[in-house]
Amino acid sequence: MTRDGRAGATPAVGILVLNYHQPDSTLACIQSLLAHEGEETRILWIENDAGSAPGVPEALLASHGIRYRKLSAEDGALPEAGQIGLLEIPENLGYAGGNNVGLAYLADHDVPYAWVLNNDTLLLEGSCLDLVEEARRQPDVGLWGTTVATGRRMIVGGRLVPPTFHTEVLVDPAGLDDPLAFINGCSVFMRVADALSVGGIPPHYFLYYEDVAFSLLLRRQGKLLGSNSRVVVAHEESLSSGLRSAVVEYYNRRNRWFLIQEFFPAHLRSNQRRLAYQLQKYLFRFRFKRAWLEWAAYRDFKMQAHGRSLRDLRGRT
Image (cartoon, rainbow, N blue to C red; front, top):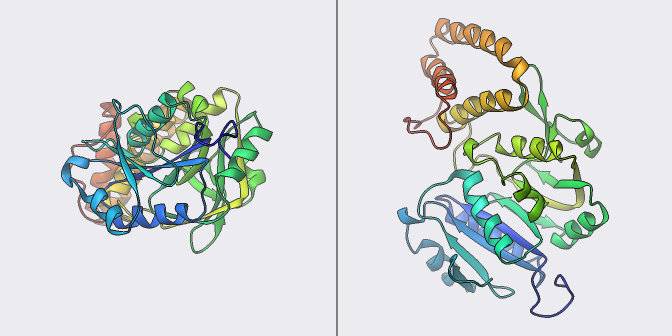
């Protein structure tokens, strides 16, 4: 049911699905949501970099018989139940910035909960009602994950591994009690007010490690992390950027430096020494592109070059 139990009342949950040049995958994600979700939910297709492919989402939705409504800040309305809300962003704001536009839109329309899903996910089991029930039962939790099926394993979140602060997956919900644990950004449920109380998903990360920083910021507010095993999504990792691509490698490295600086500054010096060793190792093995990516990421961190990089990050590593 809706938030106050009446037809036409404010929906309880806004589901945000951010698309960046992968409309077919976004459509599949939305179709999986429509098969499970009811009138308590509004699904928003957020089109990042809409200026580069105008009209594509509308044509794709229409060709599959899916009703939609184009949204804008001036529109002042949510889509109807069963109707997809299309929210266009002219430029590429990255994962964090694009989803923050959606969070702000939900806040403007008094939608209390948000579920952020990668466009390369499919909802297999459960619905947002399971997540709302959990949130109402646990007011001290700030972020919830779901069970994520990656093909090889079922994961519930991740954990930072000092002293390098690389990440590892968590398969046991009890691991979310670890202060270094985080909820994966591919499927994260939250109260909109909690998210905006820390400024939303940290936009200066642009891409990668923003989910880690988001979890740590809410922990600073005294919030816990949780997981709901009744909701299961399948996830095809790094669809838009490509596994082991220069994009993935660069942003992971640069943003890990930002994370260490912001949350673990005592470890900066030891990681700088480790960088010198890593560069020597890559050069000795003639892995020049890897060495360049490591150095470029560190240089941009030192220059505090946040957000989208202007570097040429094409190709694989």
